[in-house]
Length: 118
Image 1 (cartoon, rainbow, N blue to C red):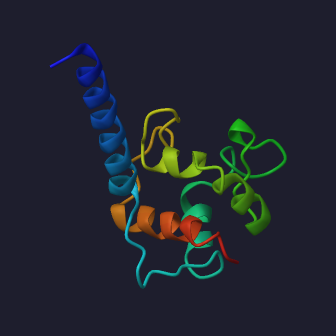
Image 2: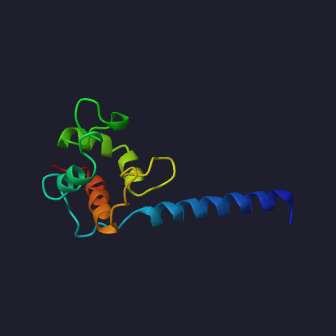
């Protein structure tokens, strides 16, 4: 086998593996249609938008999660989800606390995947 064939196979393998990884990280939101007012605000207000954390005039990291508009804006860029899922590239949240349950994370993730409806 030539060097070029090996390089082509390696590129193909990396491409296939990266495509599969994207699909694995997406949660199945079939039948899960949370809105901010019906589920998400309760999660954010009880775990994130607390005094000294992500609310008020000086929210932690400049991320205010205390209103629909600010929560939607902060969530659509992917950083909120990275933080609550404890993924690399973000500070694990809630900081110093226990990771949210998979069920609560799924609600937030499906809300974001659905465009963060009010």
